[in-house]
Image (cartoon, helix red, strand yellow):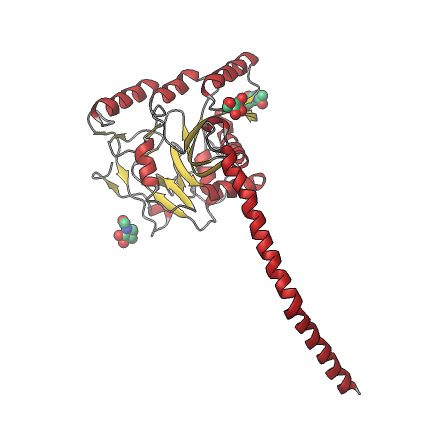
Length: 331
Ligand SMILES: *[C@@H]1O[C@H](CO)[C@@H](O)[C@H](O)[C@H]1NC(C)=O
Ligand SMILES: *[C@@H]1O[C@H](CO)[C@@H](O)[C@H](O)[C@H]1NC(C)=O
Ligand SMILES: *[C@@H]1O[C@H](CO)[C@@H](O)[C@H](O)[C@H]1NC(C)=O
C-alpha cells in the first residue's frame, strides 16, 4: 500500500517534470529573450540622445578620464593658470572638474565662484564640506561620491591645484595599464605616522606605520575602485591625510597597485625630468614656464635636474623595506 503510494507519487513527480519540459522551459527562454530585448531598447536612446552635446553639460556621456582637481574656492588665479597651461589642450573624452567645499564660505566668494563657472563650466561645489586642510579627506571622499553618482567614466585622476599634469602622454600610458582594479601612482610604504603637528593622526592604531599608498599629488583610480569607495563611504574611517586614507580604504582589495616613477607626486618635487607625467608643488609661474617649454621646445624641462632621489617600489618585501633602494638612474 505504502509502496504503491510511493510509486504513484513518483509518477506524479515525473509528470510534473514532463510538464516542466514542455511548458515552463520554453516560457523561461521567451522571458530571457524579451528581457534582453528590453535592455537593448533601454540602452539605445541614452546614447543617441546625448551625442553631440557639449561635454560640460552632458554628465551622462562616458568620459575616458575625469581629472578631479582639489581646489581652494579663493584661488581663482591658480585655476586660471591651470586652465591656461596644462588644461589648455582639448582632449577627447577627458574632462576636468575643480572640487571645492562651500560650508561657511562668505557670500561674495560664493557669488564669484558661480560667475567663474558661467565662463568655465568646471566647478563642483560641495555644500557639506568645510574648506580647510583638515577636511581634505572628507572632501576627497565626498568628491568620489559625487562623481560616482553624477558621471560615467573609466578612470579618475585625483590631483591638487599645484600639480602639473601632462594629459597626452598620460592618456597614452593609461592604455598600457590594467583597465580595471587600477591604483596607479608613486607609492610609499612603511612611512611613520604623524604624531604631532598639523598632520597629527589621532585615530590611527592599525600599525606602527602607514599602509602602502599612492602619494596625493596625483594618482589614478579605475571607476570600479571609485565605486567601491563611494558605496562604502559611510563606513570608512577618515584619517588626516587624504592619500593615506585612500591607501587604507583600498588596502583589503585584490587590485593592481602600479608604482610609477613618472609620477613626481611627493610633498616636494624630485626635480624636473621630461619623463614626468605629473609633477607636484608647482607655482602658477612654474606651470606657465613648463607649458611654454612644451610649446616652444617640445620638452617640459629647460634642463633636467634632480632635487631628490627616486626609487622603485619592491612589492616582494614588507613595507618597511619596500622603498629603500634609491636609484640615481630613476627620474
Ligand atoms: C571649518 O573648520 C575649521 C577648522 O577645523 C573651524 O575652525 C571652522 O569653525 C569650521 N567652519 C565651519 C563652518 O564648520
Ligand atoms: C557649473 O557649470 C556646469 C555647466 O553649466 C553645471 O553643470 C554645474 O552645475 C555648475 N556648477 C555649479 C557649482 O554651479
Ligand atoms: C626586492 O627585495 C628582494 C629581497 O631583498 C630582492 O631579492 C629583490 O631583488 C628586490 N626586487 C627588486 C625589484 O628590487
